[in-house]
Image (cartoon, rainbow, N blue to C red; front, top):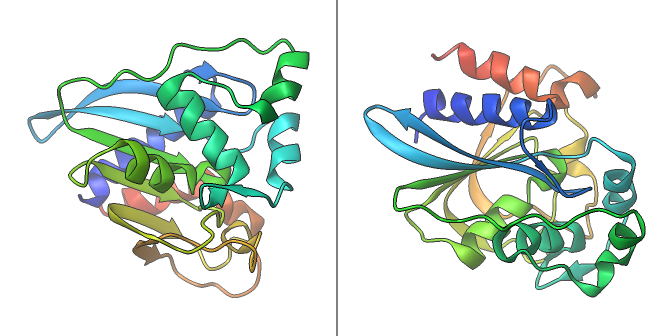
Length: 204
């Protein structure tokens, strides 16, 4: 896939953060349809940390099925609608379940950002086909063994601290990685999705 398509995904991520999606407490996602170069695509877009429950889960270094626990739980909430035993806090907060994602008869693309960065490749390798496309912007590490996931891409800014959080307990999946320009040092604002949008718009 190309940068113009990834730009659509970055805008979809921004829309999720703006509240235009489904909210399950620490899993915010949207299901939309876009047309790109004459082909209709179903977009599954998953946001990152933007509320208190997210930050709690960020510091849980346990894993299930080879991926960070929060990514495992998010993927299964979205794809199956099922909550695990570790979702007790969500129940105490009266967070309601949402109908799971429904795959349509068209190509699928998964876009993720930050905390949900490893959720995308885990979801893709567990529930999707090799032909489906996936892309994570500024992903946190979340894989135990760094398994290969085909047709998946990461955008990482070397100045963004998040892609290194959780190492050496977790690492990135074995995917295509495009690194943005290294300006030296740590620049927190380079983690925001607006930074990715500005980068991709240069090529559009």
